[in-house]
Image (cartoon, rainbow, N blue to C red; front, side, top):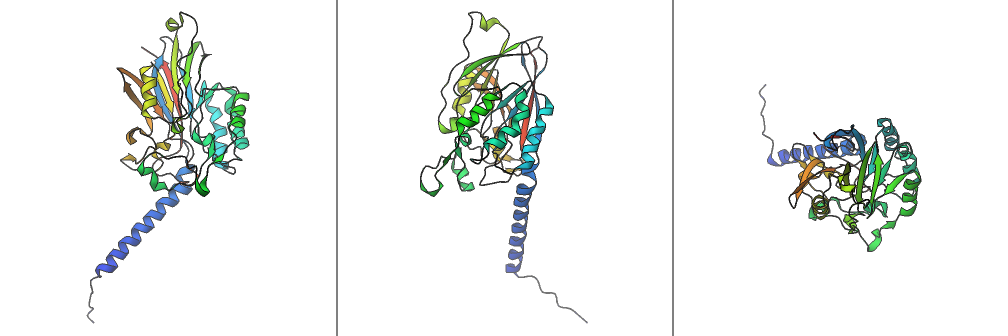
Length: 316
């Protein structure tokens, strides 16, 4: 018996293609929501910026935890980070995603508060996240919504900062402070969140007339790595700048990288360790991809959540 083969219609071919694309998209969203956003990573970096003869020094850089109650996997992972035994913890903000998250956050970070630490806040240490259309990030940095039914909910920032302070961590919001650690004087300069235009530069700590000749390292800390902030700290002689905010793009294209940075930083700089040049000076900048996600977009793709361990070594 002969059979007649009928070619598929153009409509059925297009429908099949659309169906496959929709299935692939749904699979990618499911992967990002249920797998990758819980696939916590530790990125290791090394920098030779310490005074000659110094022993290695480890910095654990945390950012954008965005904790909500009930995030057990994230809380357990945060508590396990203490096993790294860092010499210093630097927290670059956006710790919260819910008004009831302060107590579980302090509990999760409790073991790390056995180590010296410094911190600056991000916008989500002041206000709980409100709904934003994810596609709006392509139009430029997000804005704080102060009107309509998505009015931001204030968070108890004072309680959060008090908890960090009781744990021994130093608040660098528009402040400068020197901390001696392992025989090295670390000079810190930090700013409040540039994304909210709260930064006010405090310069570097002032001490004795001979402080510039004593062995020291200058570390600048900010939440959002806007170019104006990187320019200022680089021109002012920082040896290292630490920031977060970008989430590494949160949703990236494999082989390409971040699509947005949620600030004026070029997208290829949205995650990782890169040099920044300003006024004839060059400073390494570490931008963390962060640990959490935006509460209204709880997924990651090709951009694993991370903490960063920077091993600082002596200059040759």
